[in-house]
Image (cartoon, rainbow, N blue to C red; front, top):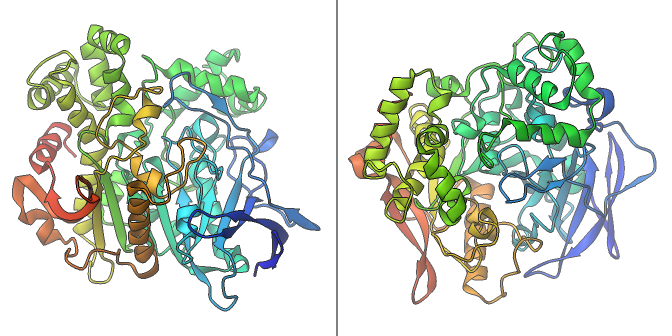
Length: 562
């Protein structure tokens, strides 16, 4: 249990050793306690690069955990300029708890997996600060680093470089929490997974992985599932690994054994390895997500993903737990992929010059086993539905383009996941709740995705994160008495009650989502959900809604056949 000593606190982990943390200033409350940069695995460097993570060893003395460790090495393709940051030695986690908690009461644990397409993300408290959750005094928060991009997901498709290292890092961190979080005042039998975007996809992947069963008890999935295209299984991982090796300059990259290939790649400078991903782009930052999960041989030691997530989800072979699923506005959810193309005139012209080629990529049609004629036919079906059959991105077609990208990348995978889940889950035991975040506040990730443009859009992908985590390194703080701050409190209170009880706050008049009411509305809607929207008089309000483009979901099902 953590013990306070002026500004520092100490927790002793029976299996590992003692850790010294620090008190930090809160937002609404005076302070909270933080243990920053606690190792959960051996550094994945040298011979441990491209290997499954190994548990951290016990340490001697008191481990100082008062400063955040560097992020995992990454190149952020979501930001113009593609900044590089981080280090390979990065498998650390941060633990946050309210100050002066009762030593006799273990708190529910929130295990947060950050977004970023599996290629970028941070647990630095200036980027994903815990203050809003700590203000409630009701939960303990764990945020984790995991390997990203080429370091986390490159694979030869065999035992020499099996891949999925980032997901295996997350799984090892979950085991660490199970074994050790009680020493910090957290309840290992009351863990909620929380993720956004690729973090939510990771959450979903853990729910369908039998090796993770029993490590968590509820799940919150914001704008992402394991069926999303940015985490779709890579079909030919060895081909990608050899291409990366060739770009770096490894001789005979296409001829040497996978063992030699892996050994050569372990010797490459980390930044050279990171930059090799640029060669996988076909235009600007697209293909947005270079590296993906892969299927592994179930006979391999430490294998993580041995079945196709689509098949597992469709057949109901997953852990049934209470779910809370979230989505963003229809014209904003696809913003991370599409908004910079719309906003930047030069990019828009380049896109229009290669319209069919680039559109096929954005629509994920080139990843399917369709003939060229079939791909073009399906693309034209989509253009007719969303863009009035126009083959140009302009002021008349931009809204339809945003809706199309939203559906392909986010809404359709989200809809399929929910549909499959409801086919099997007993919602009386493991309820399913939905929310939609349509509120547009003072700040928006649209400014990040467009390189600083002040043009106003609907609330975009990740904007709900601004109200769960304080992001002082990215956006100015909310004024304590502002509408944004008040909405943040309500939104966090909703999440925290779900974390505590399995039912979110403000849902007294909103029914459980069931298979029956999911289908009852027909082409125009799904189960009722709680929606956060702007209000001219009150600033914001919470309403019940069920609107959803189900007719388009059925169109997409016919086009993609899954």
